[in-house]
Length: 409
Length: 100
Ligand SMILES: Cc1cc2nc3c(=O)[nH]c(=O)nc-3n(C[C@H](O)[C@H](O)[C@H](O)COP(=O)(O)OP(=O)(O)OC[C@H]3O[C@@H](n4cnc5c(N)ncnc54)[C@H](O)[C@@H]3O)c2cc1C
Image 1: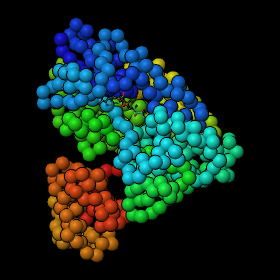
Image 2: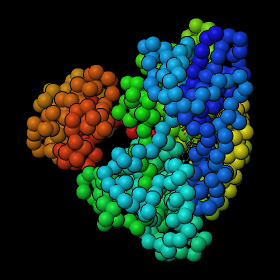
Image 3: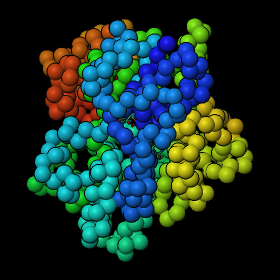
Image 4: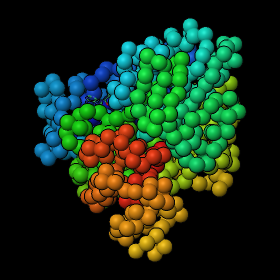
């Protein structure tokens, strides 16, 4: 029996397990998946929880329900990867030898990386919404809040779902309007980036939206510390922003197991080939999803596009054929913009988001780099697609590689 | 070798990092509003170049802190307003990759 071991049963690990189980001969290959938690979180849903649109139950399901029969699922923390010896050690004492390893351990927030962040005010008037716990506590806070200055701060890049912070302030603008307290709330968007977003054209477009909605943009703000006794955040170059409510996107890092195994960069992301998804160091190790160090967005849609390329390459590696450099950095993100509307952006390593129609050129039904009601429905439909198609590794009506057709240059 | 003789890209970063020398660094620093390069500046610049030669990548601010032992606060004081970009330019390296 030969072994494929998949580390992490989140978005990417689950998709890979489904794709491989459907294709590999069960008498020849054992697929083993390791994760430390029984629950699969629909992380894109965390965004909606602070505003009471989704509840806890809307974003959790048992991991086991999404893995195919025949796959060996082990619930344990991963202790260390030993790539020189082709094996993985688990906290429960098990040692897993592998012929091929897929790392899909994702990324998590680390509020302790910022001085003062956890000093007493954490989850009192400082919240994150990148964890279920943070999103639920923020929902509870907002229910009773009477207004003041809300500051959203991105600590440093890269973060997963780089559009989520923008969506948060757009939704907040809508929600405070609904509550009848918009005139009592000042919204500030403080980011280390030079503008609203990373790519120039989208940044300009989204920047205009901030302005239209009366959200104050503070670019190039690199936070050094939080002074929670005075309710202010302070940057490395001594700029200060006062807040009544701080919503933070803390430093995002890969899992500590990557550091323990000596396989990561300074943020514990695994150096990975941009186009083949093979580890830069080890031939029989592959990396997918948020765990990579790639300059593509850390998003579920990206993990899905990567999975098509990675599946093909694992099959090739098994047969000893050369890998295909087919991942182009393709990302496709719905941006919820409030008041029942949304924006859609589609881009890759080389081509920034452009206007046009998607996925059918000239037809749509979605509009790129434009705000429409249909795009909002796309975002809401994504949850159904995620649980019913995406995780199962089914074909989606979207190509893995970005398509220039239907776009206006 | 001075700024007029080397090839710079559209944003003023050196095209070939091997064309760099200390005189050039001093000139680039002046363009960035840094009149004099102190020992600490040179420490940062040398570390960045060494890392780039080893890894082919411009080190991040976090890398400078973890591996170079350069506190981020000091880095901002040495190279005000965007230290990652500024220090890379003075060290003759390409513009640090933006994130997505
Ligand atoms: C607020 C928010 C909004 C988002 N919105 C969107 C969106 O609209 N669209 C979109 O496409 N994406 C969105 N994303 C991003 C998306 O959720 C992630 O990019 C995606 O889930 C990444 O998948 P992954 O498999 O790489 O990591 P994950 O799904 O995070 O899975 C990693 C798994 O590895 C396990 N693991 C890690 N370390 C260990 C260990 N040492 N031992 C055992 N198990 C371990 C974890 O338990 C976890 O199950 C959003 C994310 C957030 C937080």
